[in-house]
Amino acid sequence: MTHLSPSPTGGHAVTPCLLSPAGVPSLTVSPTRLRDALAAKRAAIASLETRWVAASEAYASRGRTRMDDRSSWDKATWSRYLAAAVAHEPEFKPRIMQLLREIHGIETLLAIPGPRQPRPMSGSRQL
Image (tube, rainbow, N blue to C red):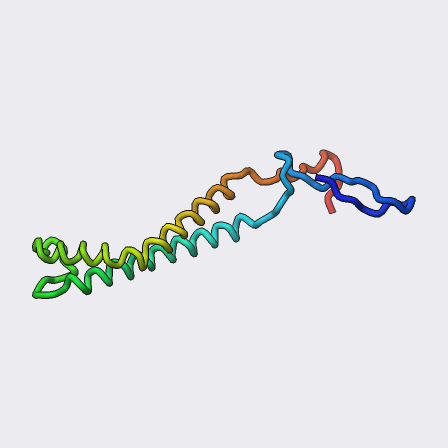
């Protein structure tokens, strides 16, 4: 990519912009910030999944079934739970899927090798 900038002669000089080795404009994003965003999105998914399960369990809890012990659930309880999970899907699944796509994008960015830091020349003084 090139940019036109004023030249000392009064016209415009064509100067190349800084490009990464891959030929793409260099955008720097802190890997720490990306990892923080990744953790926040994963936490949001966990929260949505917890709310989805809670909503489904609330519907399935009719009767004397202990909701904290799924081994005690009978067929009717499981049927109510699954029916409620399907009914609540439009409320939770689209946002979860969006967050999963965003997580994939961040993981892709984190997998890109960062710019190499120049090594100081041997025998040179560092400030």
